Length: 382
Image (tube, rainbow, N blue to C red):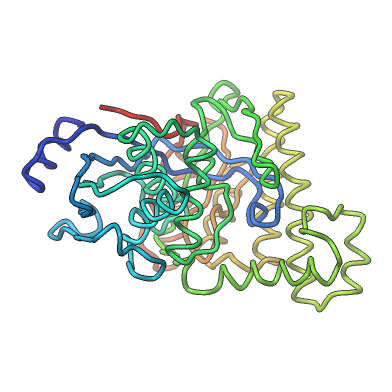
């Protein structure tokens, strides 16, 4: 497909591209809303990628084209005029990467970028991080910056948080930049360190299913930021640098000292960090089926304590479990998006069918269900 993208690039920009770079979306096995609390999480990269076909420009112009978002329009920007808030909608993410590179002292200029891919936007699969990391890697290679995955992820996070205005943690970008095939990434978000833990479900007779509920979410609408602000307020009231510094044994005392809505946020983050560690222990020991109960407990916490689920996500989880999945939960920031389910391979068809039937019975559009293999992170493909 790279030659088709290159041909499309020539049609759009009347010039030859210098290369094609790809970065994947991700699903998070466990560890939701822990990254901005300095906690732990356990993502895997999807086979679905965003691809950026690019060439440098020497006139300071940044021209952006998205095959999925605005196929009939090229967004034309001036690199020197990029400031937070100056670019909106999807174009803020690639523009923000260029801004972040320059803010970090890298002498980079304009470019022509053609963006295409298969990561569904608004599905909780980190389409924004995939876009940011693909652009960051393209720029790093084109300008010989020699940046590693962690540095690319940090620039991408800054682009999303400071330029696009979504106060995200680092997990999505680290997953997109640093994952490898056949493994999950056990992330310590405080130290930005990670360990690759083997995760090949099919080797254990299992499959990881992703259910795109079709409910688009928008983390820029304020709900996500409100949860993060609540966590920061709770940490300040409890006198700790971040909620990562609390253990499950601290929860009874925290509940007494905090308003009810903040106590619930704290309870989720603290118990979710413990679930990540339990999930990692299960993978390290080869007891992958035990990951299922961790997933299901995580969904209950996101639904009841963090309050970021929605009826469609709950329906997908409940119907998958009833049909034989060993565990299921919503994944991503919430308020829609996707659900993951860990199911025996022989039950994949019945689980997929049960979820679709449940949506039909409730008068909902049919969800998209697919099997996800843990895949590679950002790389050059042409």
